[in-house]
Amino acid sequence: MRHDLAIHEADAARIDAVLERFLGDSSSAAVLLIDRSGEPLALAGAARTLDTVSIAALAAGAFSSTAALARLLGESEFSVLFHEGAKESLHVSIVDDDAILL
Image (cartoon, rainbow, N blue to C red; front, side, top):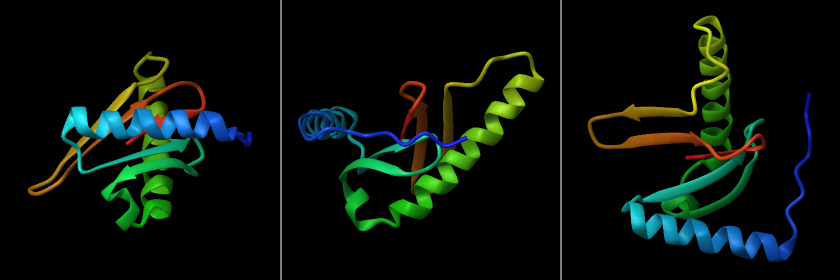
């Protein structure tokens, strides 16, 4: 089931400010806010140079798969995923019922 999420202009500006602050505080190269279906909602930093549509879709799919694993283990969900590579890492976290932060 898909629920479209509408973000008003004033809220979008606040979200952008929070993402920029998070970018600096976390020393991340990029920050991406997506909805649970994988649609990009907002981005900051080097995310502007990445294939954010593909990254968002794949991250949402991975989170959905992990939620199924959590249920099999008796959990309602796992709230964080972490992928670590030789050069890059990806931290994926639930924001609320509608959004995921990468």
